[in-house]
Image 1 (cartoon, rainbow, N blue to C red):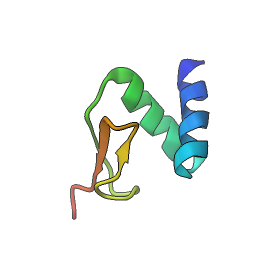
Image 2 (cartoon, one colour):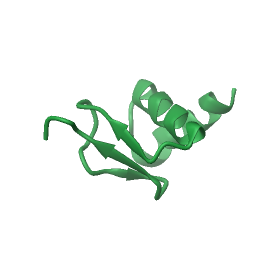
Image 3 (cartoon, one colour):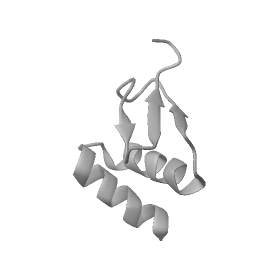
Image 4 (cartoon, one colour):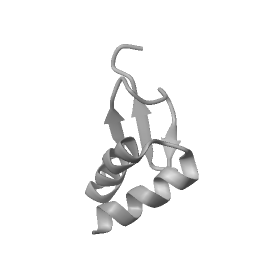
Length: 57
């Protein structure tokens, strides 16, 4: 339930798709600092603590 609530808030605040926001929410809840993905904006920082990094950039 927490992932869903955080994910919906992330989707609204950052304009991410529901699926991407659930991935970001899970990373935030897990305490990650970096999320490696090629599907989101490289260098974007979510909630001031989770950096999105494209490994192919």
